[in-house]
Image 1 (cartoon, rainbow, N blue to C red):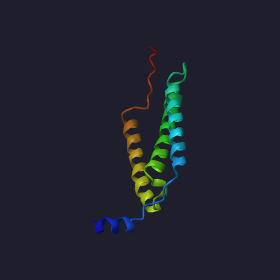
Image 2 (cartoon, rainbow, N blue to C red; image 1 turned 90 degrees about the vertical axis):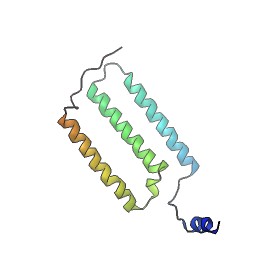
Image 3 (spheres, one colour; image 1 turned 60 degrees about the horizontal axis):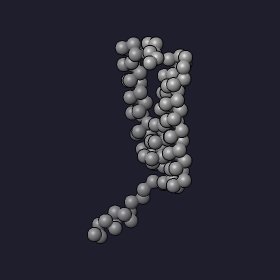
Image 4 (cartoon, rainbow, N blue to C red; image 1 turned 45 degrees about the horizontal axis):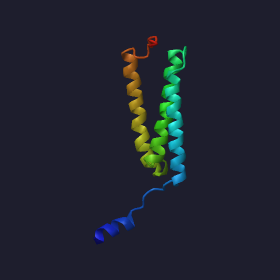
Length: 112
């Protein structure tokens, strides 16, 4: 039992945002999700614009979730670098594989 108190007393968890901040982030995530769904129903939007807008909105949501809900925003800068560095490498590898297999050639959308 004493071990639990010692661990709790010595644990210096990074900073946390207020409940209001989490609610605001959740609202922003819901709004961006609604925009993503609405974007799919815009008639006549070019595929390049559709895909690029969805990728940008997804990236914004990713950084909001990682920054606030995973508390990366409040972590030590070294921990952030350990997360962001491999992420950049992974994105570069994905882009290279997509380019290698011509995944960037966008076919026309079929309207149902």
